[in-house]
Structure formats: structure tokens, C-alpha cells
Length: 255
Image (cartoon, rainbow, N blue to C red):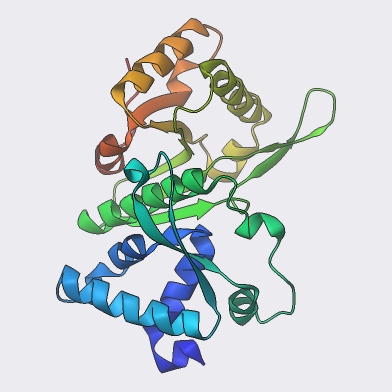
């Protein structure tokens, strides 16, 4: 079995499953602490990924992804049905949404956020957990008894000896009108009012919107401020380079 031959192959396979789509360098960063140097980590990661691909457990996409990392060519990995069955021990096929590349740039941005989250937690010796969709989605009843699904990009928990911080993360790529983003904010507020999350954890997570640049952040904050009936303390807006501070220092409500 792959995991028995080399534990790192099993770890890499599970990482690919968790992220749906992830690049070689992102995988290398997640396993960096197991190797002496970044060069060694990249070389060994490539070797293990090649073995997994040769055994048809993962598939490789080599393409330019517009709007992500400047549209640069990257090698992207995803799980195959054989790899999924290897991990689950079942006979089911992967669902079509798992391998759909329709939102590939967004999914890679989520993977980048997740990788940075784990890197930062390791740097500051924090316990960290990040869960992606659909496992992190929340269902609740709407005002008319209809079932509504809240779909955060990630739910994350940061734990130290002194605190436990919980967040819903939304990775914004500045592709949607702010009005649509505000509608998603209202969905979080309606979910908060059900009390389900508070009953489970004692507190409602802070909703963190991660935006690609300061201009988008300013527009987002203006749109939030205009919604006077939204509880402002529920939301914070940051750029990706501010994620480290959030994880290390806790939530800061934007002005």
C-alpha cells in the first residue's frame, strides 16, 4: 500500500483530497518541516507526486490560470476516482463537482489561504484546523421553514493555551459586485440568529473576508458600513498578507 511504502505519499494523497486542487509548491510548503531545505522538500515532493500519478491515484493539470498568481503556468494536482477509493476504502466514484475546473482559480486561492493558515500556525506553535466545503457548510431553516445552506469557503479554528478563535473564511477575488457580497453577509447574520453555532461552540465565529488588494478592501468596508442593520462586529475584511496577524493576534474589527 502507498502509505505503508512511504508515509509521505499517504499524507500528500490526503492533502490533495482535502484541497480538491492544489499546486506542487503548495504541497511542498505543507510538508516543508519534514525536510532539511526547501530544495530538498520540493525534490522529494515531486518524486512522491510522480509515483502517485504513475499509479493513477492523482491527476496532473498543467495550465495557466488567469487571475491567479499573475496567470502563471502552474502544475495542479487533483484526486482520481482510484485515489478517492484508496482513501475511503469504498467503491463510489468522485462526484462531478470535485473535478470540475469551472472555479479553478477560486479553488486555488482557497488552497493558498489554507496553506498559509497552516504555515502561520506552525510558525507560532498554535493548534490549527481548517475544513473546506462541503464538510464545513452549514444548514439551517429560513424564515419560512425552508432549508438553506450556508457555504463558507473554509471554517478554521486556532487554539493556544490561552484562547480558541473560530472563523468562517470567505476568499474574495474581486469578481463579484459588492451588493452580492453583502447578500452573503446577510446570510451569515440570518444563520447567526438561529443560535445553532453558539449552542455548539458557545460563540459565533467571526466572518473573515479575504480580499486581493487594498482597493477592494476599501470598497468592501464602505459597502458594509452602509448596511447599518448588519452587526458590524460580526465581520472583518483583510488582505491575504494580513492573515498572519489575524491568526497570531486574533480578530480585529476593521474601522
